[in-house]
Length: 126
Length: 372
Image (cartoon, rainbow over all chains, first blue to last red; front, side, top):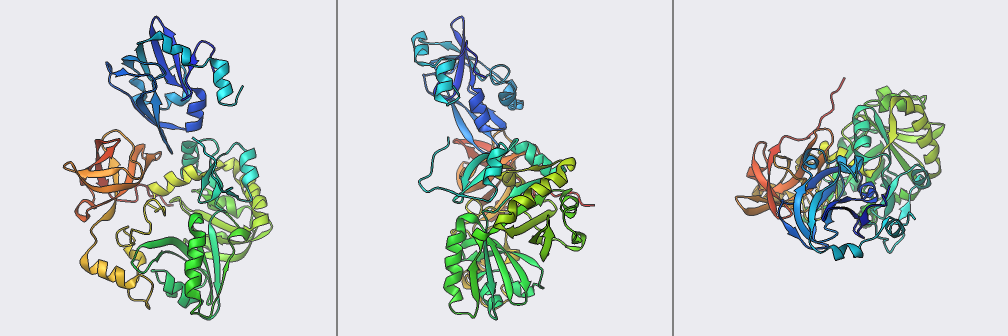
C-alpha cells in the first residue's frame, strides 16, 4: 500500500521522482480516510507552487480537503481524467489517480519527505 | 482529521458491533456513531435499490402522559397533535417565542393521553428542559427515556418485506406515519412506526436498550439475501437531502423559522395558542425575507454548508446543505435565498472557495421513490 520508490509528506501526499520531475498524488491512507472521492479541483498548468502550498482540493461525500505540494516547482501537467472520474483516486491512488506533474524547483526539498517506512510509522501502520 | 473531543461521546448499544464490522465512527451530537461501513455511495444505493439498516439509538425520546398531555404537546409544537388519532405520527417543529426553531421532532400519539416526542440527539437536553419548563403548568408526566430506548431504522423498497419476516404482526396494514405498540420483533417487544429519514418506505423500530442488538442482527440475517446492508450517518445524510428532509443545525436552527424553511404546512395557526405563534403570524403577514430553495449545480463543484450564494456578484444567501447526489449523479444543495429566487428555474452562483459556480433552482424533493 506504500510503495518503496515513493516519498511521502506528512499531509499524506506522495511524489514519484522521474528525471527532475515529480508526479504527485494522495496516499492510500488518505483516500481510505476520505472515503468515496466525488470531486477533484486541479490547478492550472504553468502555475508555480511552493513547498507545502495547497494546489488543489479533493472532496469526498462528507469532506473537503486541500492537497499540498510536497516540494516546490512548476506544474507541467494535471490529470484531467480526475475531472470526470474522481473515483480513480480511490481505485488507483498511485497510478491513474495521480493529481499533478511538477518540474521540481529545489531537489533538496525532497530530503524533508518521508520514505515508505517513515510514512507508515506516521500513520501508525508500521 | 480526527480530533478527540474533551467529553467522551456516548455509545449506542450497537457501538461494539459497528466497530467490529468495519465501521468508521464519527462524533455526532455527543455520540460516537458509525459514519460508514463499506462506503457512503454503496450504502446509499443499497437503500434506494434494496434496503439499509441504520442505528439511530442516539435520537432522544420523551414520553408524556396525563390529562394535559395533548395540551402540553400542542403548546410546544407548531403542528396540531389534536388532529392525531392514537397510533398516528406527526412531524413538527418546536419554536422559541420569536419563531426560531428549538428543534424538529416526531410526535407519536400512543393513546388519547399518551405521547412520545422523538428529538435530535444533539438537542435532547435543550428540548427536555424547554418542554419541562412548560410542563410545570400542566397536569402531565414527562420523562426522558432516551438512554433506555434503542432505535433501529430499516429503510428501502425491500425493508417492509424484510421486517415482516421477523414479526408475527401484519405490518402491511401499518400506513405511512402510523405506529403500533407491543409488536414482537425478533421476540422483543417494540414500538414500530412506518417512518424514516431517507425518502424510502420502511420502519423505525423502538426497543429496550438491551434488545437492540438482537433486533439488529435478526434483521441483517433476515435481509442478507435481499441486499440489506448496515448503513451509516454518511448515507443517512445524502439520502435525507435527496428527499429534502431537513437537518437541524444545517438547514434549520434557532435563527430560522418554519415559514422560511418551507415548513408552513407544519404551522397550524387555527389551533389553540402555541409558542411562537404571534411571531410566526407577524412574519407571515409581513412576508418572509428569505426562503429555503433546492438547487442543482450547473457548473462543477459541490455546494457545502455555509458557502455564500450570490446574484450578479452580490451575496444574497447561504448554502445550508450540499452534497454529491448518488442517485442524481449531480451536485445538489439547499440554501436560503430571497423569495423571488426560491422558485424553480432561477439561477444564482454558489461561491465555492470564493469562485462563483452557477446553480439552478429545482422543484424538490430532488428524489421521489417510484411507488408500486
